[in-house]
Image 1 (cartoon, rainbow, N blue to C red):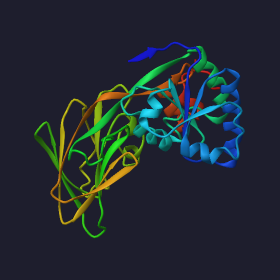
Image 2 (cartoon, one colour; image 1 turned 30 degrees about the vertical axis):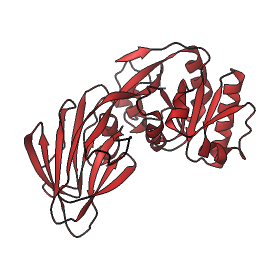
Image 3 (cartoon, helix red, strand yellow; image 1 turned 135 degrees about the vertical axis):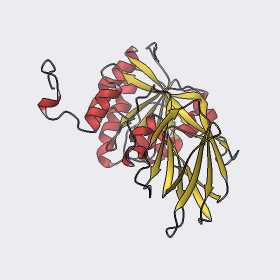
Length: 309
């Protein structure tokens, strides 16, 4: 479900990790535009340190470094970078509901769909309220409790990978206490619909639309050719038992990792909140995958009534 939100002046938070000299030009445009429409500005502290020598900041800014500081003043967060940057916002956004607009200064960018050339018109649309919100499901690691502290969830996927090169990962998977399969592989992914276009896609998993209410279980380099990814309802509880001759496994929630021992069980479910991504009126999931995966570049792939460009 998507909800229309109001426009008007809003407190904008900027988050980023790094940027190139080429990206500085576009970031300057963004800064100047926000000043021209009188949007109060918050900037992530480490990002401000990296940009302040290359970008002229012409209005006062508030610095934020923590979840509490962000949520006390921001109405919307602009993520400056690629999809990895959006994933890194989760530890700050958490369950606050603050919407995220992804500005793509990276490469592919399924989540950060606003290109460099679209920054100025995108800000106009946000200010005018010409956008909707995509509510993206989040996967939660329920056990072992505290393995990832307070941020025990991921927008893309939970991954389990072996840490030793000379033996296979042996992973038993149960869905709602019903045995699914023992995977002999390099590892296993449990992906959200958002994550279906990320790591899971590179392991031949299906593309799943954002509102599908499913998880995708995808083996990484399975040693059994008949084993394929499977789609299950995200209302399911997934239990994973780690076995085999590996002494340790690496567990990942998006880009954050912890090491656990063989014999550990992971219990996974859907989080009780969603991450809100800003969707502009001229963008949708299908146009994004067409653009990013270069579908339909041959005219024969479009209906006769559809005009390219």
